[in-house]
Length: 76
Image 1 (cartoon, rainbow, N blue to C red):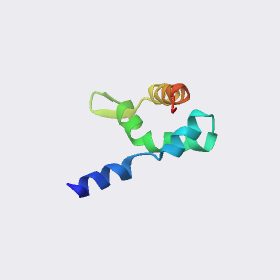
Image 2: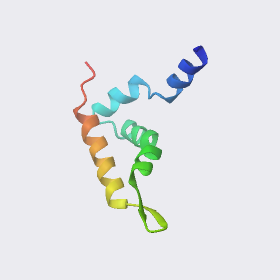
Image 3: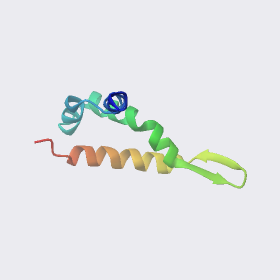
Image 4: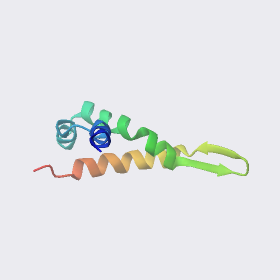
């Protein structure tokens, strides 16, 4: 059980990073985008017949939404 909680902690972004991003820190925001990139890419995959591709428009919109919601997030 303790092993699972350690794995979860390793997947979490540090509070300081989130707080800095909410205050407009570009480097912190880049860390958040990098952290969520695999998930965003997974959500952006589309299939067309037997081909799969990343819908770049959707990926960019998801990244923009993540940035907007991060800036709105209140850490107090």
